[in-house]
View 1 (spheres, rainbow, N blue to C red):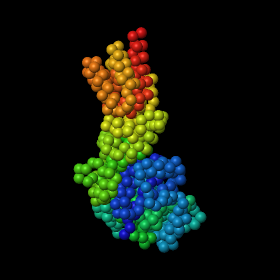
View 2 (tube, rainbow, N blue to C red; view 1 turned 90 degrees about the vertical axis):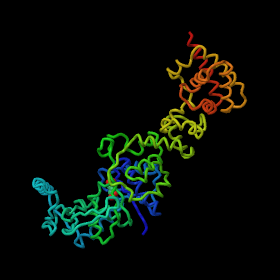
View 3 (cartoon, protein in one colour; view 1 turned 30 degrees about the horizontal axis):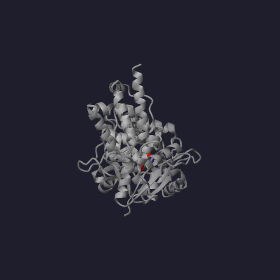
View 4 (cartoon, protein in one colour; view 1 turned 180 degrees about the vertical axis):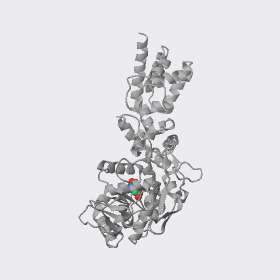
Length: 467
Ligand code: GLU
């Protein structure tokens, strides 16, 4: 059997982490089994869907690297097909027109609630309606007897009695198909073998299987993923902070780190925390998906991001880092090679936003020193230290970390100063603050011109302090 999975978002907002996790698990399962991954945009709810959301979802999927093998298919382009299937169900006696008014349905629901019954349609129009001209919806004739057993690949066997289900609406009075109908037709036509989705859809699954049975189609296998909770135990939502995938990009996360974090939300492989994409594909299996809900932990995501920043080959980070430099209006062509920058900065930066911000002075001159750092390191006697360094640096022919480091060491020695008394004023002079990569790397990445200019500026600044 060819494995085919799908991600079927409704474009009513951005791609959020819950959706991204569903997409990832579906993608992984397809990749692991040399199958195909389908992207389907469920845009039949015209009021709530928007082109902007479609684009946001596609952008999120692209950024995450979850490429689809088929699609994207748009449900709004398949209305004729849905209509044909609805007609087929009507012709074969699996569906019927219903002319019950909203008032009648509301009244029925209220009575059922009062009697502590589950609200459900009572089937009045099952046996025909009198007035053909009246506004009517189409309902699926759900079997009245028997039960549906969902052999869920995550949750195990779940039995749902047909008498618990009512006759759901498959076409609205304007003829447009409803969610459960379109999903069934698409899963059938697209030959989806495994439906992997959030367990909020579990209630729909029995209904969908009944429709598939009526259409003589073999239902796919289902895997319902546990919910994602926020740190307060409630379902993850906007109020828990960033839930949009693109917000994580903006906040300086690497897509691989987010994917690694998401794969662990509800799936585990022993105690292993860090998984390359390749390892995820190799190791992923639905049987290892947890049944219980998992809680989103931003600290752990940040930790993972740092692991990826520290351990990935710099060239895989490059395009993301350049993107962040550009967001901060830093032109990477005005300073150090960004690849070398990544290597120099990555130990101390947990996000690429931090890294870009911490790299600013390598590309742009600053017009202010960090107040505390300047106060501590720019004293009257630092002037002579900086002047000595300036002379030495101006004379050196080779601009190389090792050579520069030696000059700093020798200057300290000659002046009988502790290394910090030389290196720190120098650091503040060339970086504007007291935090930077090691001084030799900092100097070599800044380059001769920036270093000489900035030392001169610091000397002038100190001279002015006396006045
Ligand atoms: N369009 C549905 C949603 O965004 C998903 C449907 C499905 O996966 O079956 O919730």
